[in-house]
Length: 172
Image (cartoon, rainbow, N blue to C red; front, side, top):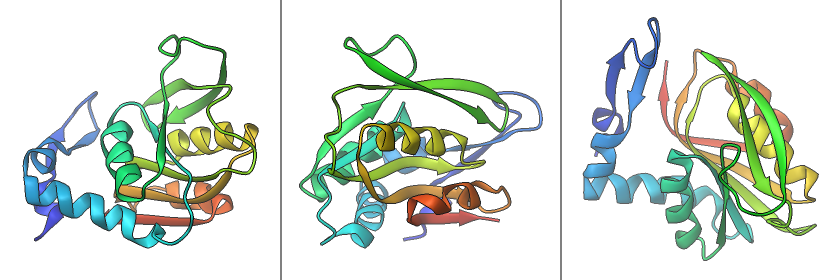
């Protein structure tokens, strides 16, 4: 199955000049969704992943499924004001603006082996901020699993310090 064929381009969203990669057709396809999750999880089987971390919001979709596939727990990283307990915050840049993310201050224990998951790698700002939060809590990042990577943007370079970066679909 060609997973890339299940990704829809939406021009000028969320603002002019951005070509948004819409994953909802892939999510609606049972075989495509199952294959995507397996291809995201497979490189990290046998690497003793304790926790999978996913960024709001599409990282939740793949993160929980990958966590289940790896028999690991799941920790969400959310936008400010969405988590009810004490949090750590990181700021980051998007290809079209800036934002902040938060994680519960007790979400990761020192030494836990963590796999980072998201749907898309563009400039790397979101995932870099997520990795910084996990490292602040003492988590050991095993790697990063992504559904889609925009290879014409420098996101992968920004993530090199965090180890293996695996993307299922690469868009040039």
